[in-house]
Image (cartoon, rainbow over all chains, first blue to last red; front, side):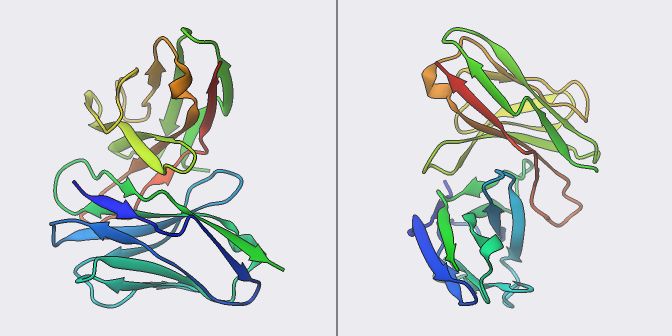
Length: 116
Length: 114
């Protein structure tokens, strides 16, 4: 069974600085997708960024980028120029490309605090 | 706005009571899911559906039931509520057009069983 591990329950960063959130996963599959979701205090789950395992290039969305290391099964999220609105719980998630149900497996989350 | 709508947003149940959490999406997504989120535990899959009339169990289905009579609706039924079912429940949907764009989530239902 696939598992997703986020080893940092909490992280903090100063406004305008950069922070990296860690995620590792365990799978025997070669084709899959990885995601980072943001959950602010409003509770809404918001997709931040996605990565396709067959692509070597790391995904980037504005201030958010990932460091995808397939051999190491690592998928970290870098937030540059951190803003107060980035404060949230961040979840890493995995989905196998095969099968027919498109289930996501989530990590336990990392709570990010942004200090002014 | 298009999306996934969950009702109610909050609910307090007494032990042994039953209730249905409603979920509706207007994006014509085939795939729908119910997750529960417990503090420090991430999200766990309860049930999912790949289309109208087709449902299947996820990781933590005990104590729950679902139905999918239409593409739009995917209600979650709690029978004989127990304190262990105190959680935040999320409904989500997805459409896989050969790629994968993640889920669209509802805003969640916070359920407390006392």
